[in-house]
Image 1 (cartoon, helix red, strand yellow):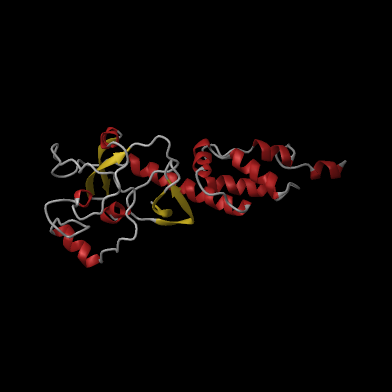
Image 2 (cartoon, rainbow, N blue to C red; image 1 turned 90 degrees about the vertical axis):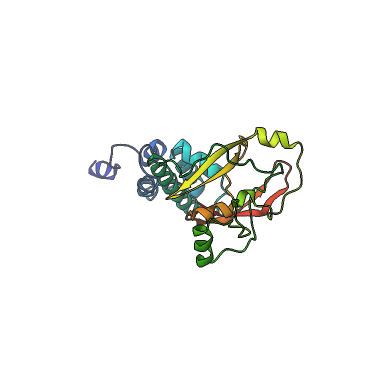
Length: 239
């Protein structure tokens, strides 16, 4: 009798039942993972079952983010990825709540981009040195060609992609926006794609705004709806 009492798990429920009922809720993925590991260590389930149970207990938003990533090869890798993505989501939410002052010298008549298919990503362009970056910033020069009178997104020296269908369709799917990070703001045209699995940003924009990035492990293969590779074909970093 004493043996049965003292062997009964804490909380008054079987370990398997506790695992199945465990949910992330308002906890961080790291805290949820600690609770999960504590219970999993007492169970006899294999990694395949534990993987499914862990995924089911994650928040819906985090499950969606993980579904868009390459499949992990082990339960521990999947948990580590979930924690990393959850931390990024919290950082983005915290940044979105910060008040952003109006960008300086905002003009309603900002020149419209030339009618050509946009380059989704600028890959392979050599990076500017810190000194050159500061010089072009101070002199308001283009980050691409070094010329004056325009920004990088309207640079005449940028190679244009092949025309894809009717340009009027492209402009009907874009909206003018300001991208701001820290004390820097640039006007761009955002392409609306409701079927995209990820949100892409030009690497030149990231460098221009000096947005911190982290490596994407493993790299993700990026293709358009026609299965053609976009840019260099792989996403290697994320903000």
